[in-house]
Amino acid sequence: MKDTAQTGAAAGEPVSLCSLRIGTALFGIDTRQVREVLGMAAPRPVPLAPPYIAGIVPYRGDVLTAVCFRALLGLERGTGTSCILVFDGERDEERFGLIVDGVGGVVAVEPSAFEANPSGLDARSMEIFDGAYKLPTGLMVRLDPRKLRPAYLAQSGLFGALKQERQGVQI
Image (tube, rainbow, N blue to C red; front, top):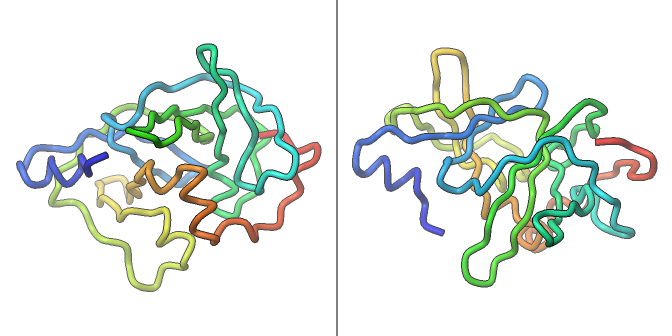
């Protein structure tokens, strides 16, 4: 995948981001990288999976691995409603879902509002955050779906150490 946010920045055009939230925190992913937004779905647990894998969900005759974004952030899994964003892989990359608390609308941001990650950010955040946009209402952290893929997360080795109870916890 090419960095579509960078492409928009080079052209000076506004970047369209799909806004999503975890608690009160606001995140954004380039709309061209999101295949579909699913409503509520209860993932089926996968035995011995790392804590950031919420489970698997049926998707159009296939099965998606669902990554719990709350777990990546070190937060407890939510007990309310949640949404799943579906991302397609290019070439041999896997298709997967990202579970978030909610999905907002499309937000157009100016490339000049983008700031790189601060150097004091912890290693896990540096790994999955791509920087942030300064908006009039606050910060929107940009995410790169390539860094949220289950295989990439496993390779990084930063997220397997999260200690969370997986048994009986609803997402």
